[in-house]
Image (cartoon, rainbow, N blue to C red):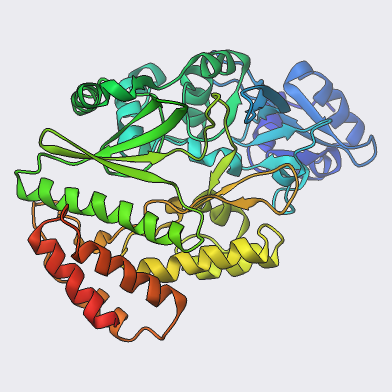
Length: 445
């Protein structure tokens, strides 16, 4: 009996990977007939496993980029290591051929055989997101045949963007040799310490015009990336406020100062944080935050967000970090110490009115074997007090105050008291925000 290849292809669109026995049963033909038909697909056919228990998948081309590409990790020394080869499947999924790779931490029971229904979970952070992600999408959407809103992009668009425009993405992955070459040659703007004031003003203006694009670093606060050149090279994310003379700018300047104070408070008490520095230039405040996914010699570290890990490997997103900390420890992803630090950061954040502790605001630094490492704590600030979308400037928020009033005695409570007291006494925040800080300190004490 002759088998119509179109009927056979349709069956691959459902599960993506299927055995000859299943195809024989579904299509009502013998396995020898299936085998002869499969041979006609040639290089489009992927085969997994031994002859008797083999399963099959059909590959799919993404634009003009082909069907498969080497996947690299750029090391902390700047040298790339090929860790597998990614194949696009006909049903929209992917297979990572990890032959010979030492990166066992990327293989998980949730995705047997390294077959993924969509973009592999460890590449999910490469979806354009946040302020810079929207700028990236604005610049490249037309070339990719996509809408400018990156939230509408499917997995194929994300992979094509990685292949064609992967210059300075967060983390250490590079997909395809062309993207790797571009990534190795691409660096943020180099800024000499002596030229910081003038160069930051130039870069800020460029960002606001939409000219400066080159990373998918998340978060909604306007920012740019630099390598600050002093005695050493310091890779930085630089956030900036609107003009401080305006009420919204004044509040964002207060919040950037609060983020710096929170990092200093945690660091002084033994918590690993992304180190920061506050610089006021003309009528704006800039917060420099050291990038923990980069090294001073242009190397990279494989940072993966908690969001990507939780969505694929844990109980999904939308849970407190304390729940993730427990799950990550139980599944062997984090040590007891790192899990405890993640849970502690959540409790501290709640007591400093951080109402934006989503899964994108915590990350893991991957190693080839488990356990992996918790990344330094970052984006820790009292977001309950950020300006509203219509320009509303919030005063003292009752819910955070009530939470503080009911908080039991703990190390995190002591740290929060220290944080609010430091803010209240700072000469670099507004009188209005100092009063808010004082009230939080009194309630906690």
